[in-house]
Length: 409
Ligand code: ASP
Ligand code: MG
Image 1 (tube, rainbow, N blue to C red):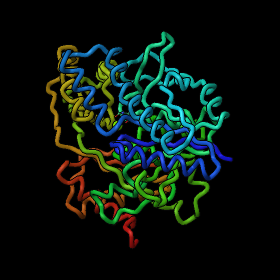
Image 2 (cartoon, rainbow, N blue to C red):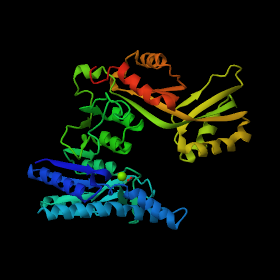
Image 3 (tube, helix red, strand yellow):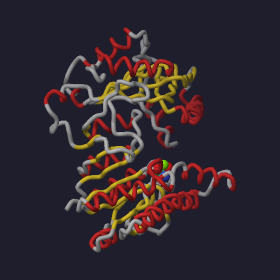
């Protein structure tokens, strides 16, 4: 008998019919002789609707009250799912995040899980019940309700799988798995049978839809995560240790191409070329909670001044510009410029580690496509280029083809 954690996202429980469909799937796991703990998100766009509702009564809703309100979305879906299972003749019980033993810090809106006390869930499982847990929420040491940040149910599911020593965490969603590129941009994209945690993190951070914290947790606790469709039985993608378990051919390949729209670049011209300047620029951004991705500092020609450019997501641009403007008197900079029409495209694959030639191939493919590169960054298993937004889809398609990821390739 195996123990599985299943997670169903908002689109998988969007209406009554879909909830009954999920109930049937869970019943199937039970009939196969396994134990299952199911984590669900709020129905459809419920969380968005609750946020809008909060704003009808307050311009800046109180964070504690807002989290408490948002947590009700998941309470609706867990209770309905449990009722649907009971209606089909199964012994099911729904538990809020608090009841399920999920403890968090007190950072409303993006709380982090500090601990999972699996006692209650284990007792319910032992009595033969199907356990349904509300995703995206937890309880602070002061017994207030928190939420984990948008899309946080993935993280709830993987945290529970780790705490319960589950055999696997299945994430059921409205797509069939993880692809070599976004299938909407690249029709020839192929579904990956498996992908390593690190690769998935790079793919997630660069566009694919999964809560990155869930992948980090999976990697730390070594929880195999299986991503598949809740609407079909097509095989999905296994996210696991890799690439050691992979066959040799695949190890030398690029795994996928990722992209992200909404990239903005800020350039601070003519800052003094002396110790402490970069720290002075980036400390206020960090304090404001603005995450900076690509950073490029030019070598100064005259050794007195230099230019520093960095990227943020477009929604963070106004705040980033305000922080930079506040520094102007202190740094004596000559000008601050910005461009919010950019995107990033990334080539990802653990096979690139220690292997030369991938970067030059990427640049050649983009050059042949007449696509100009604005900035470049790399990690051990990723090369990213910042390019114009207008060219993003074309770039992804060209790279997918150029690195022989197309279906036929
Ligand atoms: N319902 C929450 C949201 O929409 C959590 C989730 O879907 O994972 O962000
Ligand atoms: Mg959702």
